[in-house]
Image (cartoon, rainbow, N blue to C red; front, top):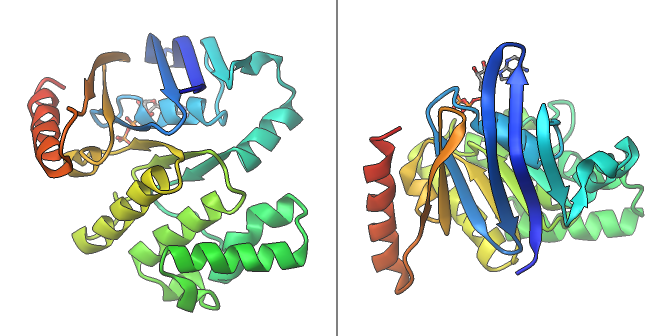
Length: 247
Ligand SMILES: Nc1ncnc2c1ncn2[C@@H]1O[C@H](COP(=O)(O)OP(=O)(O)OP(=O)(O)O)[C@@H](O)[C@H]1O
């Protein structure tokens, strides 16, 4: 499997606060990786660096083998728009636009033609169960529907990678389940690399690997055991729960 994003000796400080203290990490094509750690432990900072939204204080970030320092700002913007989808905890939809218009936004920025935009929007909204809601405004949606709209928007340009920062953090358990299954489908059926930040070990148990951050470093990477899905998921969940006590 080809490496899509790799960091080497990643350090990120905010003034005197050392958030990420120098570690290596890599995500390969088709992987589903969770990042966990204490609140304020640097998970979102890490995800932003992986998404080329933030730059490290020192260390290297490679995107498909290319050193991000060698890329122009316009090249980084193109990668962010076309190759990396980003979903935040609070959806970040534009209230003045309908569901359909929100989903289309990255394609408008990418100057796609109207017909392609319409067919792609209908396809993706249908796939994630919000096809009937496309004329509504965000204020008329439930939390889960907003997150599915945000997921559709993140996927509309067909990126290979989806980064999700606590996408179920604001949701009740039923809406959270729907979002979990959407992420599973994005990884398993659509073959995309998914990197997820969460506090929820249940959500983490759907991934293949869980990276635990502690004191600015990777404490451990827990790998899901191989075997029958339900059995391995239970065992993996327990492994994550046990290690979380050390955080
Ligand atoms: N732009 C910024 N300027 C200054 N400090 C920041 C900035 N962004 C984050 N921090 C600080 O860096 C640390 C890590 O923040 P980050 O949001 O990455 O943690 P987190 O693990 O995602 O937290 P949570 O689980 O609470 O969302 C915190 O102490 C935070 O206050």
